[in-house]
Image 1 (cartoon, one colour):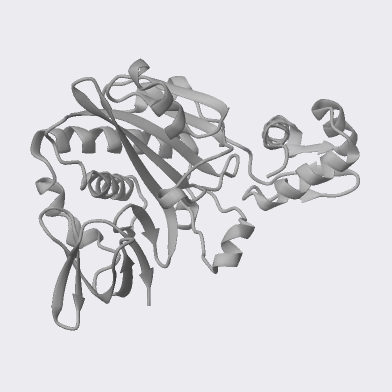
Image 2 (cartoon, rainbow, N blue to C red; image 1 turned 120 degrees about the horizontal axis):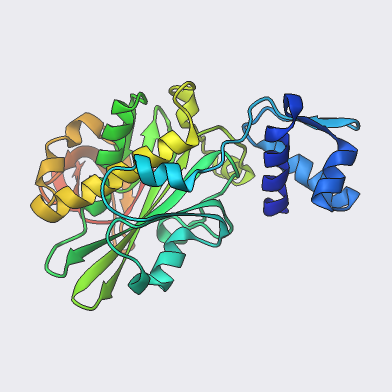
Length: 319
């Protein structure tokens, strides 16, 4: 996305302007860009879920932009930890990993824009200013604790908390995605690093709050949905952000105390893959069959012609 910082500035200007509208001349003056640069920014503006209208005379949006409020998030989020909001960063996960010794349990880093957001298996996580909540949380665990099921625990608790907040129908797609109906609305990436006598887990989540366009998904024939598709009245970025922060902190606390067992009991209610035919690739073997839930340790159970396979990690494709 070209000129992401300038795009964010334009969205903020329009949100504060009367009728959320400015003349082209006013925009050029505030942004200090050339005509060609401005055309590129306007093209990106129209791809956001803000109802943008661009003409030769004026630029307007239907839905104002809601910036993340650091103080509000700190006050509203349950659990202990600091909250920091940055205007732009390459990756919130990468930033915490680079400075892991500066973080304490429950600390959260959010960014309005991620220029190099990452998903699992090296995939890029697309960032769309004003349409998502992008955050990472630091959590620390004893070296002896098995963390392989932590993504499931976090995903389950996030889905449950969002349901309580008014976003019903969200499911967890093993091992780390949240789905609504037939499309992804959030991805979770957990990366760990040994720190002195404990393990630092960096829990990143990218949540779609409002719809936006992403041409890279067109090539993959994938759909994206957002929380506003579930409940437009509740789809407010700060509300979603402190709900996510609270859910992640709580999941880590429970997992640290009792492991995966408390979450295992909830799995069947949120299992997106149950009874679906899939191909699972763990980079060594490929297994195709019917998903039959998970085992007590969070491994995916796949019934391949009567033989039950337990898959601890891998990429899932639908057949």
